[in-house]
Amino acid sequence: LSNAEKLGVELEGVDTAVLSHGHYDHSGGLAAFRQLNKTAPVYVLKSAFGDYFHGERYIGIDKKIAQFPGIEIVESKRGIVAFYGDYGKKTLAAEQSFAVGDGGRKAAAGCVSP
View (cartoon, rainbow, N blue to C red):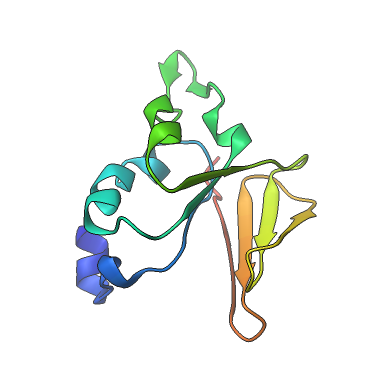
């Protein structure tokens, strides 16, 4: 939340959120985001709820996130889903990434951590 504040992003006005993948460091602020913004759908790949470890340490997301209001769990065979203006879904070939667009504006992101 502090990063959004530093960037001047008002989280209450966000209309859509996408969780890029299922690591705790990408989902840790989701509960606080939900407190500020109760209306934006949050898209999460079904695969994000897997059990992810770094050695012996669990690095996956809290499974309770699936129960948060407004969570939209989407499936993808390869790990990337593109959301367009009507939020129709198209599957693309990549892993732990996402792409969004509304016909004019587009954005893509992914995790490059090893």
